Amino acid sequence: MNHWATETIFLATAHFAAGIIGFFYRIFLSRSLGPQSMGIYQQVLSFYGTTITLMTAGIPVSVSKLIAEIHAGKTVNRSSEIVASAFFLTSSFSILGAVFLIVLSTALNRPVLLLILPAAVFVGFSSVLRGFFLGIQKTVPIRWSILGESLVRTLFGVIVIKSLVLAGLEGETRGAVTALAVGELVSLAVLAAFYKKCAGNPGKMHIKINNLVSILTIAIPVSLSQIIGSLSGSLEALLVPKSLEISGLSASDSMAIYGKTAGMVLPLLYFPALFTMSLSSNMIPRIAAALSKKNNAYAFRLSEQALTLTSLFSFAVSGFFIILAKPIGDVLFSGFSLETLIMGFAAGIPFFYAEHVLMALLRGTGNNNIPLVNSINSFLITNILLFLLVKKPYIGIYGYSLALITASSVSIFISLYYLEKTFNRKFNAVKIIIKPLMCGLFMAFILKHTYLPLKTLGLPEIVCIGADFLLGATGFLVLAMAMGMSLKSYK
Image 1 (tube, rainbow, N blue to C red):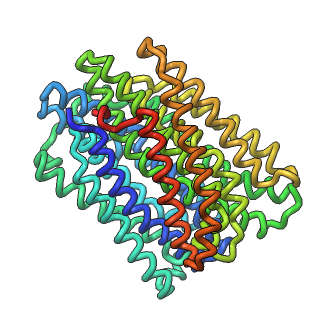
Image 2 (image 1 turned 90 degrees about the vertical axis):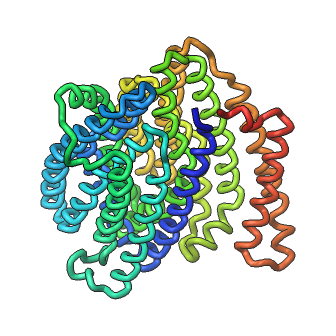
């Protein structure tokens, strides 16, 4: 097998490059659109995610897992049949997405929601091809598609927003939604070109009933889980501003706080999760391939290594954002006073990242029912706690953070229990939790005690943040190596 850690790093690098482009594009959007329009754009993105879930219906996960199992057995011809069947199902489910958007745009009186339909269709077809390439463990096409999409979306978005050429069509979002469709079209074109070179013309492939059944057997529980998660995100987009209004804020102030939280703070905190996203994408097909070869020991080792990497990474990221919340907020979002918001939500980073990776590990083992249970639990816990806490004036928006952390904690506990039950082995808690936590605390200590001395040197804020991060990261890595944690065994 290929060195999965190397592939993860390469894929994560592409995600980070695209993420950096997208992140600064989001900063451009926040400054160009303003908090209230940014809140509307964030609501559109929430519904966009729900639409994609309805259209893809868990199919990409099915494709990745099935292709990995087929590829392990060298049955190449059936791989093309799986992809053809996935295209057929994605096209069929696009009707659900279209109906959802039509009903929603009418109910909310937001015609701009109809403009995300083309982008969602392009994402659906692209995700099938991404599943194929992940299944055969070739990530080069995925990397190029990611970079192409982010570059085109950003350039197109900046041009149309500054020129106002689409302001009459979109209204307050001023072309930002149309930019999504243009970027995703480029991504699909890149993947299709690589796929044609790799596997021939998709139009000549056959659709078989048994392949449709195989895909749907995996996709149905996955899709239900994703749909519940997306619906939860959409409900949160409605509940948070409304709960803030109940707490005594005006409608405009409530939307502005939600815009700052969901449109600025959460994207900032989830930006580093591009690494765990790449890790999760790599884990599903690799664990599936290992289990198809009856190599349970290797599958367990992969899972434990993935969890250890996730903990190391998430504790470091959490400490970085908590300690340097004020300078980071001032540099990236000057004038928005995001310090307390960043600190309040950054505390949940280890929970959020671990939950996502554990979902992928469960799906790699073929267990799609527990992620569904976790999605239902998270939907109920998050939205009930959100409504109960956010409306209290002395808690406010931070009740949203508490709700998310609580829901993630429950999901993590359940996921770990069933993973250990599947492998009939216990994960090493010291390696997965204690050592990474110690490294994270040590890094936070260094960050806290070196930032002010750097400031006294009169260096620019961004330089102080960068230098402080390098010092903290160095201490983090030194302590990790001193405790015997090495990437050499990650194969």
